Length: 211
Picture 1 (spheres, helix red, strand yellow):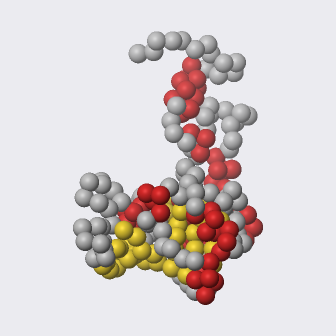
Picture 2 (picture 1 turned 60 degrees about the vertical axis):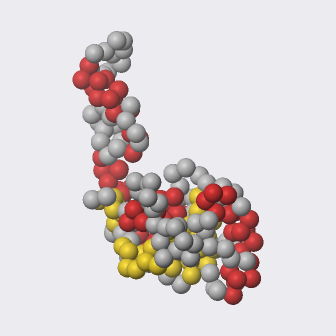
Picture 3 (picture 1 turned 180 degrees about the horizontal axis):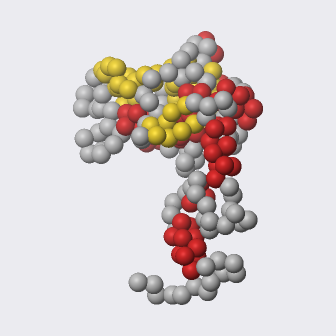
């Protein structure tokens, strides 16, 4: 039951107002591909949203990210594809410096490479413009994915896949966790193909995944 009445906006009937209030209270309402007010003058046309989705070539269907559309190949080179991830590799010094932002309890999930090792292994490194997120590519293997910026993890993974990342490894979830890293990476089409016991007894297995 409503406890407060809102005055009807100019040019908006009660049904439109109720729809607007409902939509604006939902998460990510600005991204919804439906009109707010069903008003051809005020609304962004649905065709505009469809055009942006086609341009990006990225879709989220059945709980997984999929790729397609004419805009995929050019998007990464033009603007970093993930809107904030630099299309140009970072230096080993910049990358290791940025990783220092990761909290100590999460650094265990990152492989340790010196600057010389990064260079000797031919690892390509990428950082977001604000240097709060990044990853490395060792051939087609995605390594050292990190982000200290809320909501940027998906952008990092999408960019890594766009640049050729096909496999990765991570620790399995702990017994007290409902979901773990393998579940997260499965959203992007990665599937487990083998696993190994952790070198530390009692710790989660190492899970190897590929697309």
